Length: 79
Image (cartoon, rainbow, N blue to C red):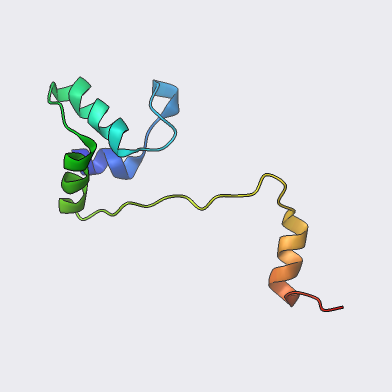
């Protein structure tokens, strides 16, 4: 059940966070099952389920999609 929850991802419409963190998972377990866990213990549980900690790559707020596409095609232009 926990692995399905993690793989499905949180639902912000239900008041869940935008991304699961270990403290968020600990709060979920405590609310759902009444069992308190520290993030270190939750980390061990997640690893035993065969999952790894992953973070989304940050995106610069002023990223220019057109310039990125041009760079991917031609690379960096030299003066």
